[in-house]
Length: 217
Image (tube, rainbow, N blue to C red):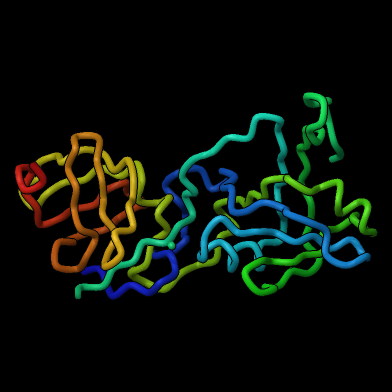
């Protein structure tokens, strides 16, 4: 049976059923910090900062037309009661960037994360990274206590009820305040709480719940 959940993301990291090499966007560099090559990063969620601080490498990317959307690192909460610049960009915009950097040191700094990237030795070099999205390999995410799961591991799972009937595929997680909600491509919405969860197996891409399809209608 699934256990209690904390505010951090949930489950063992062990081989992820998706691609462990997938790069997950966790934050954005908003400024240089100090004069010795450190950067300041704004995490996309409260759960992102732990991963950013612990990851041995960051993948930096900046494109003239930045993509927006769901940040898949957000934590699911379960309580019954988240290289150098390349091609030129349009006039006035920072140049495109694709770069993998080792992280020498990183720590929380208020609501941000500050870090020293290998090879970035002064403020000018740090400022050249401003605006870049910071991604981390899924395999480099911290392991979590048993019974806890990252939202990105739940999205894409088949949702079944106790009778083996398909309730669809999880397409989104919505933090509803008191508890998260699973949403599927069939329009089914299920509260992600122990009262309804029978099995959560992200490695098998399966979630089983005590729920009927017409309960969400």
